[in-house]
Every structure is written in structure tokens, then in C-alpha cells.
Image 1 (cartoon, rainbow, N blue to C red):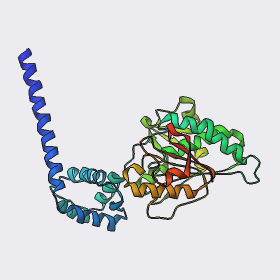
Image 2 (image 1 turned 135 degrees about the vertical axis):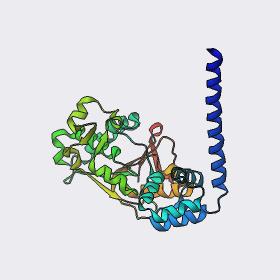
Image 3 (image 1 turned 90 degrees about the vertical axis):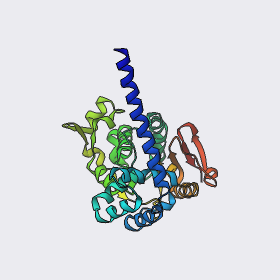
Length: 300
């Protein structure tokens, strides 16, 4: 039996190797395809997605996902399909803006927010006539981060929630993701960081999915916003923009970080992704609050 087993393994390895070679060849062919620049211009004009502001390698990989998925053999061929199919427009935008998300992603970061940031913000407003706390989740995708933040404030304030004016806004460039966020219906796997009692309190199970209850929705709103080309929203006490800027060119990242600094109130908090860093002038504008969790403070 051993020879047969070894032969089967060898055949499988050959198939895998051939697939890898074909993928490399396809990538090389696409890189040499002169139609790429034209495709970029059309994408920008038809969708408002500014291709030039993204890292070339990242952008090309995301586009190639759709080129291969549609069986197109060149960018020119894919462009013809894109011009004819509104559905492919939606698939392309989704591929370009896709974010892996889940409730309380990076639990250790949320632990710091829950134990230190939320109590600080609540205490700092406790003597104010208008107890307003404003939070912005920039690049919120399908909304899991926004609802996670809402849960933290609900837990912290309890019956005193109505005494505060809590406002949490989630923004993204992808209207399809935002529509999913507004519906607040999620598969079970994205709730893996939520314990049973929290699920019971803030979600209702519907078949194989969970829907967010209205007690969270009351302090949340979602809005389409292009953080690069549109003017920045302002007067926030906490801004979270995680795992979004890393895909932009460095000069764009720095400008965004400066925009977020301006958008924060004094003593406001700024959170970025674990793989992201503050750049240039922006690195001098924020004071590290918890460098490990990429959490910073605006001092003035």
C-alpha cells in the first residue's frame, strides 16, 4: 500500500505546484498589462474610490481578486465587464474595502478602553450641564466595532445612561457594509468574544444569526464618509481607526492622523491598529497613553 500512498501524495504535490506556478504566471501577466492604469482611472471616475491614494501592491492584489473571479484574462477584458455590470461594481468595491471584523476584535485593546478610557470620559462629564460624549469609529465596515463600543457604555452607565448624551458614529466608504451595519444582523462566529450573558442582554437569536437589540441602536448612527477626500467630522472624545490606514500611502496616513488630531477634543483618545504607527508630524501631536495597544492622548 505504501507505494500507492506515496504516488498519491506526489500527484497532489504536483497539482499544488502547478497551481502555484499558474498563479505566479497570472500575477506576472497582470503586472505587465498596460490596461491597469486605464482601469484605475475608470474605477476612480465611476465609484469615487481614489486608487492613487492606496499602496500599489495592496490595490493591485484586491483588483486581481475580482479579475480572476470573473475569468477575465486581462484588465481590458475586466474593464469591459465592469462597464456592463452594476453588480460587478458592487463586488469590486467590496473587494477594495473589505475588512475582517468581529465584536471586541483584539479583546486586550477593548479591555483598556473599558477599564480606563470609558470611566475617564464618564467622570470628566459627570459635573457638566450637558453630559455629552462623542465617539467616532472611522472605517467601521459592517459595524461590529461600533456596537462593541455601545455595549461598553451601556455596561458602565447602566440606569444612568439617560443622564448622558452618548453619541457613537460609524463611518465607512462602502455603502453595502453600512447597510449591513444598520441592520445589525450577524453570524455567530463574529460574536465569539462575547460571553453568554452579554449576548442575552444585547442580542436576539434569529435562526443561525444574532440581531442587535434597540437598546444599543439608540446611541448609534452610521454614515457614508470618505475619510480622505471629505472634510473631517470634529469634536470627538474618542476616535478609533484601526487597520484601515495601513493600506494607504505614508503621506496619506500622516495627513489622516493630523485630521483625526484636529477632530479630537482636548484630552481626547485616539486608537489605531496594532500594525499601524503614528507618522511624521502626527507622531509629535499625540502623547502615548498605552503604546502596546496603540492608544494615544491629545493633550492640547
